[in-house]
Length: 270
Ligand SMILES: O=c1ccn([C@@H]2O[C@H](COP(=O)(O)O)[C@@H](O)[C@H]2O)c(=O)[nH]1
Image (cartoon, rainbow, N blue to C red; front, side, top):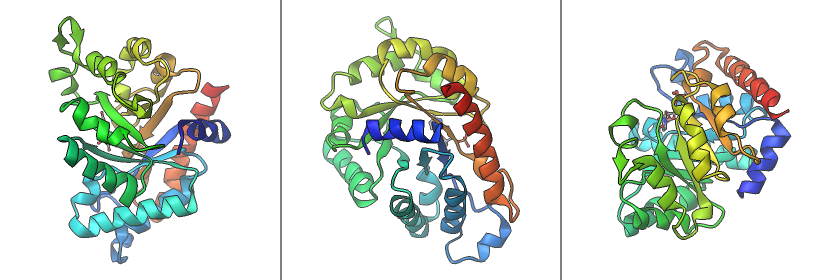
């Protein structure tokens, strides 16, 4: 999917919501555990109930890898379901990959070719030659970790490197990489006050913003400092939406939470 197509979807749905599909078998409704593939059944119901309210879905691969080959199958079925039934939706494999060049190429093939995700999250720590193999894929997006939502972000990301915070170096330097137009960045909603500085460096880039909902980030603050002319934000909520209920009404409850966020976004877009 191109960035322009994503922007069109945002205006069509009046939403820049991304729903995180972080499925934990200990948290889903008990009756689903009788199914052959409880993770997929859970995702399918959530997707069917929310696809008109969200422009993206973000399975975090950890929640699938934790269940071994069965989990990976569930991930494959989930992405195939979205791509077949709702091809207009932007998909993110939150896998936080990145390695030496030839290994990164294999990671990119896994997520962009085999699983057909639109984007994958990548850690910048190993530098240019670890990220450029992802950027080489046309109409696919590499979402680079810039300033993450967790407390540990202050351990390295905000430290000075030659007078500039490390996360700013990541933003500045990555702009010079080949095919950098395929870059997006992760900035945590819990770091909203950093967004005006971030926008000075990357005014036009899309940002994936996790941390609204369970982590306490504010949608309004993120929008105040982070919106750009093309909206430029994908706000993710995972637990706050998908675990709104653990009874039979879980999909409707998720849709209700997604609707509340979509309504706030609609008001902001006006
Ligand atoms: O900085 C980051 C980067 C990624 N994440 C991921 O986003 C979701 C957030 O889930 P919630 O349940 O809405 O808190 C999850 O998959 C994280 O691994 C992040 O939170 N912060």
